[in-house]
Each structure stands twice: as C-alpha cells, then as structure tokens.
Length: 502
Image 1: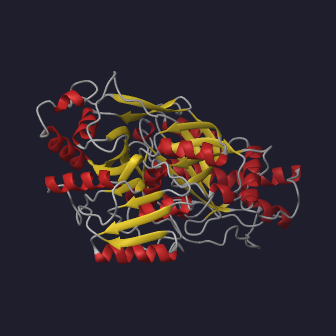
Image 2 (image 1 turned 90 degrees about the horizontal axis):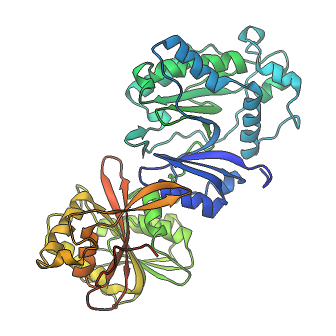
Image 3 (image 1 turned 60 degrees about the horizontal axis):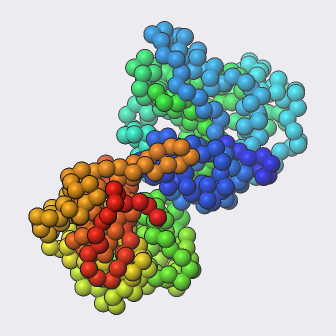
C-alpha cells in the first residue's frame, strides 16, 4: 500500500489502554482520523503488514470495512435482519475493493492486475451456477488460533474465535454447518480470485441484543454472503474471518489482518504480565538512549522485555527475591536474544544493592495476585516505595502498577503520616478524586490526580504525581501510576489549584 493509498483500520485494546494505542498509531504509523471508543481505536494509515505488526499496545488488528452509528431497532425481527444484511453485504464492488486491499497487504499475487467487470458479475452468481470441481488456494500459511482474551467495550469480553464458549461457540458452529457450500464456477480463474472460505464472528450487545441473538445475525449474514459472493463457510480453517460488532454506540465490520493477536509476542517463553500493559507502563517512563532502567520486582521480566525491545539503546536491570521468577525471566531474556541488554540480580526490593540516585527510570508491577502479595504488610509497602525513591535520580520517572487494594493501602499508610497530611492535596481533601482529561483528537479518557497521590508525594518526599491510568487486567482492575522525582530530599509542597502534566 503506497503513501497515496492509506487504508482504514481499527485495533482492539484492553480497557484503559485506548489512549496509549491512539498515541502509538499516531507516532509509529503517522495515522490520521484517529477515533477512540471503548475497546477500539479507529485510524487511517499508509502502512504495510510489517509496520502494522509493530503495534505494541493493541490486541487484534482489523481492516475496516464499514463503520456506522447504531442500526435502528424495531420489534420487527425480519425487518431488523434485513437492515443488518443490507448494512454488511451491500455494494458488492466495495467488497471487491476490500478483498483487493486485503490481498495486497498480505502480498498475494493476483493472476490478473485488476478485477474486470466480468468478475464483478461472477461475484454475484447464485450457488446453482457453481460446483465443487476445484479447491480454493490457501491465502495464509499460519493456521494457529488465538489463545488470549482481551477486555474491551466497557466490560464485554472479546474472545478468540476458536476458544469461544457458550453462545458464541454455538454461533460459529451452527453458522458453519448450516451455510450451503460453494465451489468453483464456470470460470476457474475468476473463482481462484474471488472464491473464499469464511466464517462470521458476530457479537451484539445493547438494544439490538434484546431482539436478535448473535447466532441469528451471524447466520443471516453468512447466508447472504454465500448467495452474493459465492464463498463457502469454513469454521476451522477459513481464508477470511468477518468480524461484525453491533451495539448502542456503533456498527462495525472488519477483517482481521493477522491470525494471531498483536499481543502474542513470539519472544516470550513464559508469560507473566500482559505484554500490552507492560509496554504501556514502559512508554510512560520516558526512556532515552543511554538511560538506566530498573524493575526492582521484575518477576518474569515482562516489563524489561517490552522496554528493551522498544528502546534498545538503554540499559536494563531486573531484581527479584524469587529464584523461580528469576529463572523464568532468564529464559524469556534468552529467547528474546536480549542477554546483552538486561542484567538480572537476586535481591530484596527492601534493600537493593544499588547506589542511590543511579537510575533514570524505575518501573514495577507491585505483586497483588494470589501467589505473590504485598497488600497484607503495610510496612513492606512503605519500604518498597522508599527504596524505589532512593535509587531514582532527580528528574527520573517512577511507574507503578497498583491494584485497587494497594491504592487503598497506600492511602491508609499515608494518612498516618500526620493529621495535616490532607493539606498536601491540591484540593485539601484527601478523599476527593478530581480528574484531568487526557484528550486524543477530541476524545477524553479519565486521568485521575487524586488526593491520595498528593499525600504520597508528601510522605515519600520528592515524588510528584503526573498521572493515573485506570486499566483492566481481565477480571481485575488496576491503576498505572506515574511519578517524577523532583528533589533529592525533603518534602514537595503543592501549590496552585492542582497538578499539571508536563
């Protein structure tokens, strides 16, 4: 795809990561027309598969076919199905154009340079005009299914098609088995170009879901495409997957560009923190060439891996007290070929064997899962934060991932610093949580700067909050906190009506 022919795309994102993805597509791809909604980022970019694969904060990437507002909802089920089918399958020539773009993105060689009018007519032929004499050509070599789930659309779960459970699994199997099959037509050349196997992944929510099921919608769309395009359904190994999502916000149709999610990193041997979250945390750390970056509770090294892959000119250190975690991190680092970039050491985060003010960035996922917890020990949390502050140089960045419980613990321990702690907050009320809007081309996402972060900056001396990002880790909500160290010692006194991002 040339720079004169930008394509329209959308990428799914975990809840809370949409602003990170929006900024990334602008910075990495020079994207325009960037539009954020819950769980998705739409954009236009002149980029090929190699460039698109480099997106680090997204989950699944799609070639956008259609995007409209919510479809009209009536009690007439037949009329609604007709509206949905028309929305998805109208304009056969447009489908030809999209398939042409899809082929180009995948580097497929066409037997002719353009699609003739005869082929446009062939696309509309009925199933009676075809037989099963020839087989389709496969359009991709990778036949692996998705293995991760991503949290999207404000609480809905976007599940890998091959791992669908419940109703969605039923949608796929019934849709595949009930569609009539199509083979090659009278013109073998035209058939090789235009005949595809496909499946429809349909999800609907809101008002439309109270009238029609995803199964009914998926089957209706599938039958319409079989009749109009001459394609045949294949659940297990389709050439194309057609993604349809209908809700009260928008109606979207797209084709996945890659079989595997972008979040699946080939260089990760043992997975820990989700790679998209690890990358988002590293992106806040302002890493530059020659910088020294530390993860003092590195676990399996996910944050260090994402940072070192993206910013290879920096120097990375990881510490952990657990032998098993360090062993897993070492395996990941070797698989990623980053042995010369990342150093590991066994050490307690409460007493790091490192000089004071020796790191430009400190990034850490403070454990709060079932296996590793810090929430039950208030003094431990205090020691951890003070030690991180100690090794961070003045002007350096601290990025933390905290659970809701850890946020409450931080609030509890800081309020014990004295009865006047609340005076350190911008509004004078440590229980308040004023919000600053983070805007991406006019789309606002919540960036909270609450009294608890202001109190933390007083209690831990020189750390000034620069932002809090609420994200989802699947079944758990969490918060990415960003701080900047502004002085070597003493307390930072807040002034003015609040804090501003710099």
